[in-house]
Structure formats: C-alpha cells, structure tokens
Image 1 (tube, rainbow over the protein chains, first blue to last red):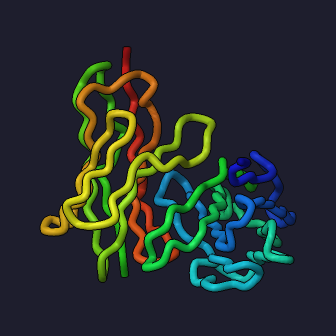
Image 2: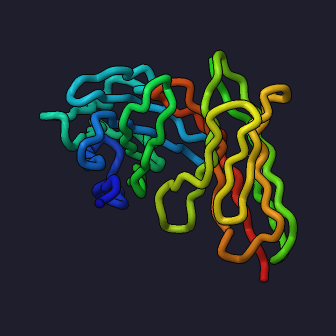
Length: 116
Length: 110
C-alpha cells in the first residue's frame, strides 16, 4: 500500500513568487493534515481536512496560504506571494478516525521550501 | 493549550551507549503520546506510541512509558547504534491534531 506522497520534495523560489505543494494521502483516509517545521523548531499544525471540508484551519499563518482538497482526495497548499519566513519543511499526514481521538497519523516525506 | 517540551539537542553518544531523551507534556484530558523519528533524507515515521497511563510503547529497542503523574514520556534505548542517528520528536494527540515538541537531534559515533 502506498504511503502519503508529497510533491515536490524540494522547492527553491524567489520572494514574491507562488508555490504550490501537493499531497496524496493514503487511499481511504478521510483525514488529511498539513504541518510545517520552520528553522529547526517544533512541527506546527496548519490545518485539517475531513474529506473535502476544512475541519480546522486554526494554524494557517495568514491569508497568503490557501489549502484545497477537491473531491476529498489529494490536497494542495499554495503560498502566494511567498515570503522569506515561509521557508521550512511542509509535512502532510493522513489518518482514519479511530474514535475517542485515538488515531495514528501517517506522514509524508515533506517538502522542503526555500524562499530566497 | 496543549504543549510538548523535549530536551534540546544535539545529543552525541558513542555506539552502545544508553540513550534517554526527556519529554514532558501539558494537556487537558487524556491524550495519546507518540515518538516520531526522522532519519536523514526521509519523512516522519511513527516510532512508538502509548494511549493511556502506564502503557509502555516499544519498537526497535526503544521504549517509553506514559507517566500521568509526572506528565512525562521519556524515550530510552539501552544500546544505540550509528543507524539510530536521526531527529526524534515527542508528540501528543487528544483529538485529530498532533502537537509536537521541537525535536532532538541524535548523533551516534562509531
């Protein structure tokens, strides 16, 4: 069974440009999450989809970030326009619901974004 | 809000040394606790987990016990190998969102 897949693995863009990250979750996982690790700090939650709906987007840093999950399958995270502080590793994860909040999230390899 | 605090790294050990990476948490309710590992050039992998107090998670020689009284989930391994060199993240989840610590980088020397 394929795991969570993220594209691209690395991206270097100039400040002010647009970048779109893609995540393909494990087939059948309704829950999809985006996280970000900036400058060696903790991995921070960005948002959570249940199928195609945004369940929780409390971690999105500002309106330059737009996440979509059309059809409840893959998801994209667009940064427009990118700023220097957006550099970091963006992780995607997916999970099934086990109930009572006890679940296991499977993570992708991450996309390393560098804004110069 | 919920949070996780883990010891800062890097931690440098010689092969076959004993490893402890401390992790404490603050949470409402009864979260599940996790250790994730990121090997060089790879993604995050679940190393072990514990879902209730006094549970011990174990995998690949690593162990951690869910201590509710001390709100801790310290990671231990009796004899580390060079291949254990990686970044280790302590994490908790009380619902769907996972809260991570800052990560501890481990270097193991031959």
